[in-house]
Length: 160
Image (cartoon, rainbow, N blue to C red; front, side, top):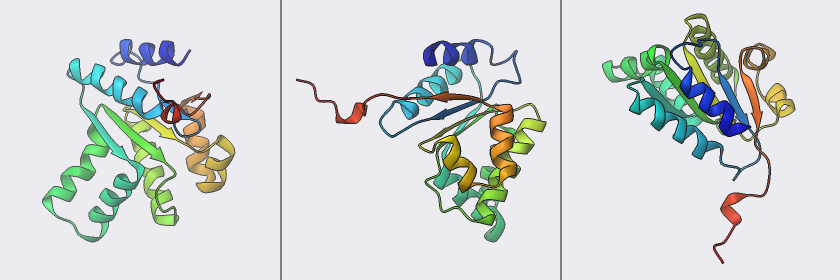
């Protein structure tokens, strides 16, 4: 099912502006691997893709707010202008009102502008709800297709 939805996301990327994906589940399930596969496929089709971990995303927001430079302005503007923004490991960043409102602002502006976003997180929907403001949580689950990854931790498997 995950592969089928991911393939549909890639195949209809330039047609279907309403499809955003939220990959969630425990560590070692292949979420980051899958988003990197999606990114590669879309880059091969000349789609402008920006990949950031949630931690780095917060660093970009902080640089833009407190140490504005030409480079920080460019990095920040790409969060809004890219065809696809990938936010990997949402929930690993230090969450406070600044980061929560910044993440909401980015997601909301991208949704309003018809730009696609793909998010991965180790947090469950309940944990997302308690970690972020209700505005962010409801926006994500209203406009994103949530896809749960489950199974054994693939990183712990040995080749025997």
